[in-house]
Length: 284
Image (cartoon, rainbow, N blue to C red; front, top):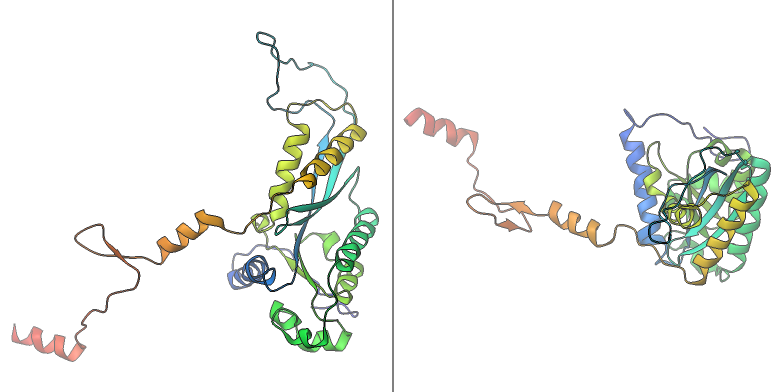
């Protein structure tokens, strides 16, 4: 179902009974991580972390020997803060903004500002590149007819995010499409497909673990300082990695009887036809 202006309307719901749709979403997201980026199409992920309260946070801290850290048994709640995050796994760069609320009135202007800056840093797209793989909307599950009808430009980048209400509103979806930004939504229960979740865990743990912020403003200052420290020496993320490759190789092996041996391809076995089997059975 689509809005009049060309924005796709997505529906929440369980993947049970719709496994093919979930598998298709997962396939496009993995395609973005593993194929699009090497092909010159940057892939970014987005998420909103929090809310985080201004209360004592669990975690280790350095203390003098014999003087463990003590937490107050009474404290006043000092408000909450959230972290708007755009993450580029291939470079490890984080674009983030600590806020007290993540309403559409706050989220959408920030997204437009940051995404416009990202697009401005990209090299211009040559006319002959518009027909390359990944530059066509049909390569990402969109209708080529719809892309032509609404005048969407060739794909310039991919954005992976959750299927939240604020991410599916017509205003931001139409704006992204007209900028050449492919929107890929994680399926229900598929937040593990969003690498922004991983980097947010690292940032929040560094900023708040073992600390007792006194106000939401202090939380935002700590988160902002942590993001600056991360970007001073960012760490690229890789989809799958060595562990995934080992599991994949294990799935491709074929067990053999009599020992712990495996083969990389199935061994051809001599199968008798049903007519031959019936003839053998009648003789015996």
